[in-house]
Image (cartoon, rainbow, N blue to C red; front, side, top):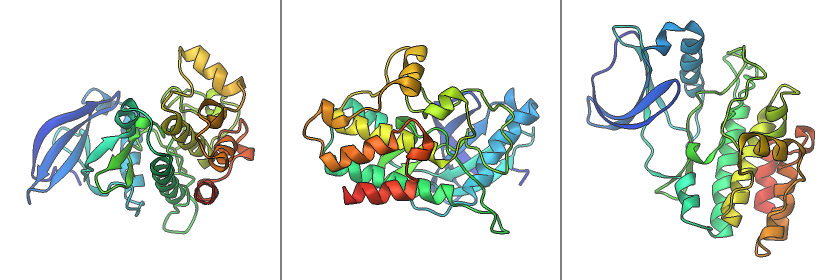
Length: 271
């Protein structure tokens, strides 16, 4: 689509390196999210491909925890846009700022997140070939606890898949403190188990009400890559032992020692 739909653009929801998101209303008065690429970025074909890749991926997902893509278009000057369903709720960073949450709520949220990640990781193209999608930024600002008690996974802007060759392999992308060891070291091609690591960090922080990997960039990267596998129960003895065992498996240094998102969800619910 080369022409924008009829929309009334409202308040800004946030500005990133590549785009800005806005509240908007479509022609039927339904509230949507409009994501508009920065005009100066639209001159770079690599950045445009990265932005439009997010729309391609969203068009393949069919999961209640992932906002539905409504439109992907360029305006008259060629600037790419996406419109998506608007999700009401509170991002996990705001939830964490309010303090510890009940273990049952934390486990339910992360189990729902892992279910969404399993869907993402299992997506295939029209021919049935696995897309190999990795979100790459499972962090508090990209997970929303919704008003209906479930969660939503947002922002696939730096996701990778078979549809987009990562020309910047080795360049750190993601949120500090939530990147898996193999992302930090760049020693191997990442897969969905890197997202599982990020989800486990979120669970640890929800259960303990403290950051797992905090400090300066080098301090955090060293702790992730070389530090001991942490135990939430060592910080808070009220954390159920079974949940702590699952956490430590998901926080393993080697992705080969971590469960997949589907396996992690099953283990978490059984713990």
